[in-house]
Image (cartoon, rainbow, N blue to C red; front, top):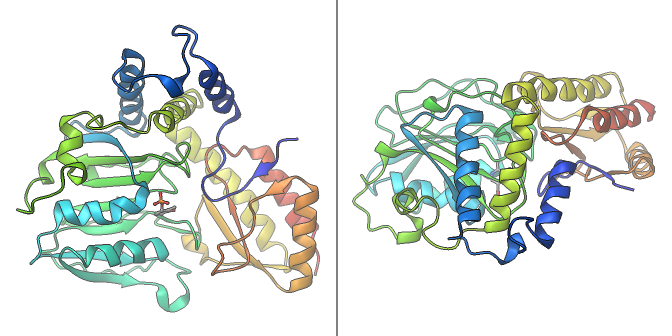
Length: 353
Ligand SMILES: *Cc1c(COP(=O)(O)O)cnc(C)c1O
């Protein structure tokens, strides 16, 4: 029996996408070849790549000032590619310290220039999104993490700023409507809400590039990938193919705004079940709760053990929290349907202290 998958990433993929992808691993009808054995220069893959980029444009409303890229190296590679491409050694980039991924991004930026911390919620265990930010007007850019996958907090609205904004949207891209024109770079590892591991979506405003004076390694220069339509070297063909199928699925579901509605409903079901049961303690501050990663603890070990046993019996997997944080985390990305969430909400409701 197929499990109900609450893993944080790599994560759930729509079943229809898995069926189509698995068929294409055997052979693509028109070609008589597997997706795994065709050239990235073949018309078939050229079409997949261009359609995937077009779907990203359509689904998010990407303006013509921005380019859509599929790159290698995970979101973590963007932690250094961003400062390498945007931050001069004598300049300062401003970061919001809202979780462990944000902290990793800060660590990498320090290797390329100065950093300034606009705000931090480290003091209270990253339970909230700080409401006051200190953003020097001469910052090269402001870096945000839209959704903090580990702690389960999310920016509900983004700070207005005159400085360029860079945002790590790895765990909530395509989960809600955004105004792409507000951002200079958006990046997201595919394996949370877009597809399998192996590629990273980057949306970049073209006119901010080429200004650092730095001699950037060819493969790490966004301009290389823009010039070569994400095909400078061999791209992760299969990962991009599955992203393409997932984007098609997303369009069929009614796009990002329909998803947002459904995601709100799903999260509301789980938070309501947690708030109603004193055996559990939700982790994030109420106003900053993520719609994608619902984090909580049990009041004691006995509840914790019982909860895990009932989850296992119900076919629920991937519910354990991040190692260092403990407790539980239910990741309810786009591909998780309401029925799956209801199973978990019922389990939560059934556990008594
Ligand atoms: C998972 C995650 C990352 C790291 O992604 P990799 O693709 O493993 O490098 C970075 N940022 C956020 C917000 C994430 O959730």
